Structure formats: C-alpha cells, structure tokens
Amino acid sequence: SAAVNTRDQATLEAAITTAREVIADQGSPTLARFLTDSAAVPLLDLVTLENDQRDRPDELRIYVVSRATIKAMHAASDTPRLKVFQDLRKSNQLTTLRVTKQEVLGGALRNKHKVLAISYPWQGFGDPDSTNDRLDTVVAYLEEERPDIEYVWWDFLCVPQTTNIPDNATGKVEHPYPTTYQKNDFDKLYFKMMINQGGVNLIYLGAYVLSIANALYIQRFWTQFEFYLGTRCVTGSAFGATRARLVVRCIQSLKDSTAEQASALFAKWGNKTTAEAKDVLAKKDVTVTNQSDKDNLLDKLPKLEALYAELFLALPEEVRERLLAEQAKEVGEGEERKGAAGR
Image (cartoon, rainbow, N blue to C red; front, side, top):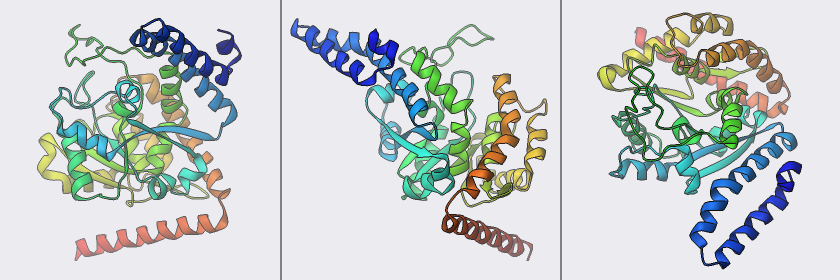
C-alpha cells in the first residue's frame, strides 16, 4: 500500500516478488500467482504507466502483435480465433514499442519497427470478427504481399477491451468470449491514452495501414477517420496527401470490387483538407457507437494537424528533406498512375 501511494515502482516490484515467495513457501504456488496477478500486478501496471506518463511525456507505449502470433491465431481451431488484449498480455504475446511523436513522423513505425495497422469495421456489437473474414484477409496480405512486416497493430488485440457485454437491443451476449473482462485501472488509463490522448492517431499517421472494407466501412466514423489519417503525410504547414502507406482490401459484399472501392475511397478522402474532412466526418450519417469519441476527435483534428506540423519542423533538416523527397516522389508516381489510367 505504501509503495502504491508513493508510486514507488521498484518497491512495489520487490513486494510482489516477496509475496509470491511467501505464499509459495506455504505450499500454494498456484494461489501465490493468482493472488498477486489478480491484485498486485494490476497495481504495478498502473503505477508503471503513471510513472511513464510523468517521466517520459513525449514517449508513447504501443503494444503490437508479431506476425507469427497472427499466423498462429489463424491456424488455431479456437472459437473465436482473435485473442483479446488481456489474454495476449497475460501470455506475453504482446511486444511493447516505445516511440516519440517525432520518431513516428520520421518513419520509425514503418522503417524501424515494420508495423501494419488494421483499419476495419467490427462485425457487430462485441464482435470484431466472428466470420474470420478480417483475420483471413490480414494473413493473406502478410503472406502474399508483405513479407517485410514484423508487427501488427489491431485494436481488439492491442488495446484493453471489455468482453461479454450484453447487446443493448437484445439484452444478450450475442458473441461470447471465453473470458469475461472488465477494464481495471491500468486498462482504463491506457485506453484513454490511446483513444483520447492521440495514441491511435499517431499510429495511423505513421504506420503502414491495411483498410479492410465492407459495406459498413463507408458508414462508420472510426474507419473513415482512420482512412483519412492513413492517407496523410505531415509537412511543415499542413497535412499533405499520400497513397504510399495505405492499401484497401474488400470483404463480404464488396469482395469482388476492391479496385472500385479503393478508387472511390481515395477519391473521397485523398485531397480533403482537415477542415473539409472534419465537416464530412461530423455528418449525421457517419455512425459511431460512442458519440463522445467522435466529438472529442473532431475537436482535436485541427490541433493535431498544427501539432504535427510543428513537430515536423523540429526534426533534423536531413530527416525533413528525406521525408519531403519521399512525399514528392509518391505524388509524382500517383500522377503517372492517373495519366496511364486516362490513356
């Protein structure tokens, strides 16, 4: 308790180790791990995250999943195949990346860590992928097109979740998960940091992005917001447009129209200014489960653009020049593709 109150991380770690040893010495190693993992370890997690925020305010902690773990989930016969964040973290199947905003803008998530972020609509309430269409698409993309990708960022896997919530309409858990999870204090703080304090924005601005589109994709706020960020590059003045980081793959009713849907999505968002994007995303027919998420993110979008423009200008000159050259090359290649299509 004293260690928690003073946020003394080292003392708390030592106390947990001692508690495990004392209880195990009484002949109950399983009980020792259960008691410490269910009570003390979450407190240590919380203290560590709070200390990180205090001592490393410019650094973001990102949990990602290795491509090997994604493949193992796909090969398993479990139902559901996708494993939730809490299960993956308990079994040490999450990798922790620590990056600053400037490192992300400099290409660290792509060039150093080789991260692919997944943009997709959940199948339904409490149901990220009961049909396995999304997991099938991710694995096929990794195997057939991106052998260089090392890690995947996928919200259900990489951000704390609450499982087995009854559907508001039916009152039933329509898609049960093997374990019922409520977010503990660490989960709530980390979730808030990722959703409300810019972590997710940074991922979609800096990583490679795979957009898995179905008929729901073009209706949902989060997917369109992610697509917009996935088509942005950061300059010293405002967001620019790029097609270098994001690809579209369609599933379900749109499975046979990937080229057409990709063209339509890029046409819709490719050249939108931040003000124009904010106006479109605010429309009533852009649906969202939590209206406060929509209001909060749209309010911060212009500030996000200004912040990252400022951070871009603070990068070393050689890094800025490299990024601008890469962006110019991408614009040129895009114009060539348009010209070829016209001919």
